[in-house]
Image (cartoon, rainbow, N blue to C red; front, top):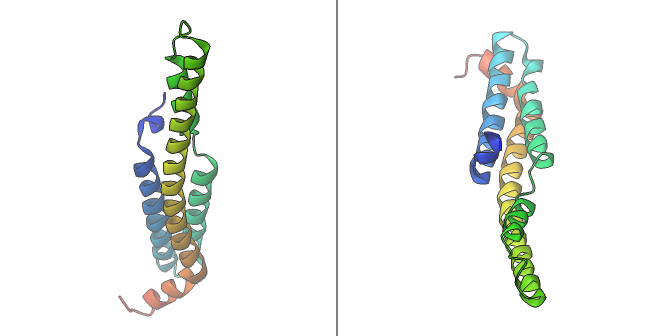
Amino acid sequence: MGFFARIPQLWRYIAVAVFSLCISILGVLWAVHEQCPSLGGIGGAFGTAAAFASLFLRPDYGLQIYELIKRDIHTDLPKFEQLEEELKAVVAALRVNSNGQAIQNSAIAIASIIGTVFWALGEYFAKWLLQGHF
């Protein structure tokens, strides 16, 4: 189990949203530093890309929970009780996936909105800063 696998889901998605914000702001500051406002949206593009990468690279936590619970089901139990325990494991996995999906949807929406706004308006933010409005 790697380092990132041990970080709770909520903190991963908060990190994605914060990364999107930071990289978006850095893109505007870089455009100001380079005196080229048209570069202002590049940070937002990277922020949006990070949001979508976290969407597609999400581990299947529910399956991991299911496999852990299923592994602990005793094979010496009657078949009916084994099926009952497996059903409990499936329900637990569905709950984990449902909760994780809700957290993920919120965080990715926030990160995507931040990235997209900076991607679209970063040039204008950079122009505004270059005109001395800080």
